Length: 130
Image (cartoon, rainbow, N blue to C red; front, side):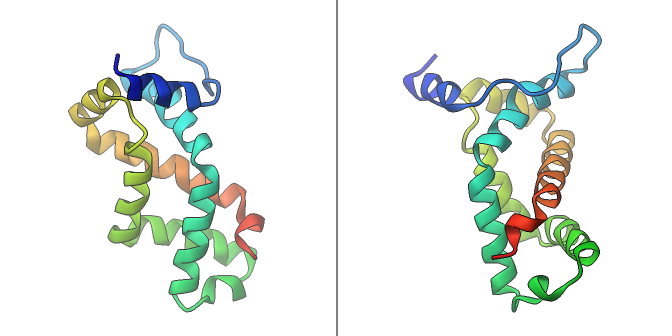
């Protein structure tokens, strides 16, 4: 394992979510890799979303909480450029082995990644209002 990989793993918080013998490979990757990386990167995701909302004329900040939640979902699902930037913030913190595993099933793992990130931002909607 390279020094880079060792350093990345050392930065990550504890594994979130349980891994069972019947867990699928995607669930294991989600709990071993995605959840810790998302937790580690949380502050940058909040700042990235606030920046995105400001650049979109700041309408997000005028919406009701319910509409803000929908806005978050919509931004991540429909704005390909923003979604790709978020994916890059996650993938950049994969080890080489994790990246190799990711590319074998990137489509399904991307869906999990974006769903987890969407829920994380929605759970913190109050932090997005500055």
